[in-house]
Amino acid sequence: MINQDRLWNRLMELGSIGKQASGGITRLSFSEEERAAKRKVASYMEEAGLTVYEDAVGNLIGRREGRNQDAPVVLVGSHVDSVYNGGNFDGPLGVLSGIEILHTMNEQEIVTEHPIEVVAFTDEEGARFSFGMIGSRGIAGTLVRDQLQNKDQQGITIAEAMSEAGYDPSAIGQAARPKGTVKAYVELHIEQGKILEKRNASVGVVTGIAGPLWLKFVIKGEAGHAGTTPMNDRNDALVAAAGIIQLIEEEAAKTGSTVGTVGQLQLYPGGINIIPGKVEFTLDLRDIDEAVRDKVEQRIVTGAERLCEQRSVRLKTEVLQRVAPAPCSSVIQEKAKEACVKLGLEPISLPSGAGHDGMQLTELCPMGMLFIRSKDGISHNPAEWSSKEDCADGANVLYDTVLQLATKE
Ligand SMILES: [Zn+2]
Image (cartoon, rainbow, N blue to C red; front, top):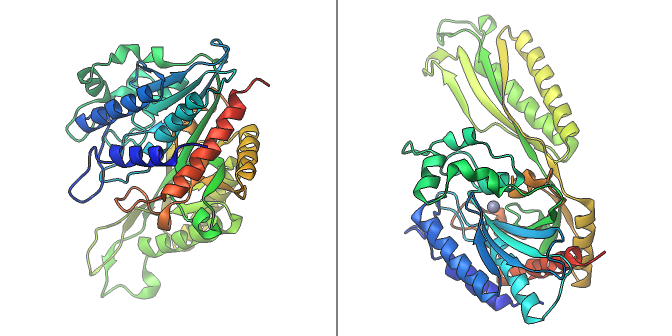
């Protein structure tokens, strides 16, 4: 069993870095706060007896050798960067649990066949540059120079921020792990939803990470005088949009797994006494099954076209982003469920609606995730909270899962 006090104390101590007056945490990538957090994490890695190093994209890594130094490595990890005014658990839980399980293995003098590395990935959240998962893309070998041109609010590019922090943007390729050198990747994270809380469970095994599909809808009708245009002689773009938004809710709800959200909407010209002539809105559609998601998309778009035709308004849709969902490895899910049972926990399966670094690694190695209960499902918020006991349960399931993966088969 892991040392739950040590894990909790480190979570609280790390949580003091980047703390805002509001109580939230802001640790943007390549910032002074993030650097301080990484220094602290490096000191924990050293205390745990790990070999500490950084790769070419700034991933901070602690390595524990296996009996066979050349065997593919088992990776565990998460991130220590945060969103603006975020919480204390999103990211740090996975990094500190990874260190904790290796610290425990060292104390118990456990020998594994495979080496194990714990990684604090560079910029998972994408808060600073609106482009995230930089560290995991680097390890996957999919990070390209063009992507380093994304800018922050001050106009500083990722490449410039990297240089300023002492990394060489032209060397990012060196962070890529060759195929066959990574046996598995496992991450412990907070759920950021209410499924576990509703099931009264501390830990869950993730079935897959939903990939977001972002669509933009533009509806063109005809603006007109709100007082002089009769109801039967209007081409109201907003009323058509309202019908589509209702359709989105209905179609997403039908599958039982899909989630669809209209999060942005603008209407033009936007006068209190003018019939809206044009409406633009976005759709975020997710499912862990790509075929299911794409079928829902098709139903929505077909239904929207029909609705617009009936209302004599024009519709244009545009794909802003189409990310494939990432299924978790069934082998890792089985091992994690076994670990739950050993610890007397009900093995609960659930999907991840939020994106995580593991999505970037599916081409490189089998990927798995564990969730722990989030109080009221809140995250990316100073009120984000998971109990000490739940953190310990999650870390113990991680411990056993990783031990199984690092053992000779
Ligand atoms: Zn996270």
